[in-house]
Image (tube, rainbow, N blue to C red; front, side):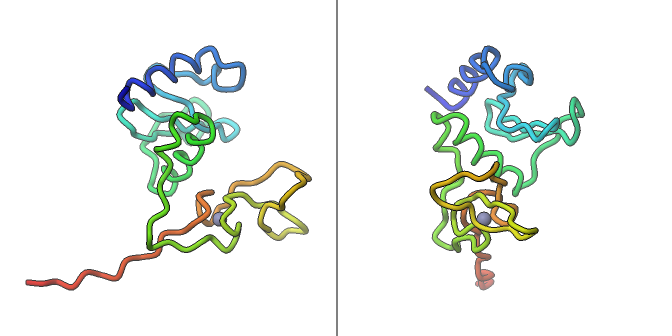
Length: 145
Ligand SMILES: [Zn+2]
């Protein structure tokens, strides 16, 4: 099954989903994440699109938004886990969330999501787009001409 067939099938399934997704189904768009109104979608060709306000026009996601959306896709749809950006060799573990991808707020400070107990809803890590790692910039290639 190709990604497009898989995503098409998931789009059909989400129309019947028991949660928020069924209310946000759009033909040809798989809902990935609902940010209290704005929604991120994956299209069958693999593009991430989103709107900035409820029912607003869809626009292509930026690179950071795309990372975030594909991490949510892997969580929401286990069949799409392979779309989550793979950690490249040149990456550093995020020091804000310590690689967890989630943080919590304590007395106004962002802290890594703690083990074991869940005191409140986690926040997604804004520093690494919840991937748990950050791409390190490549050394500029030497121009060989
Ligand atoms: Zn992080």
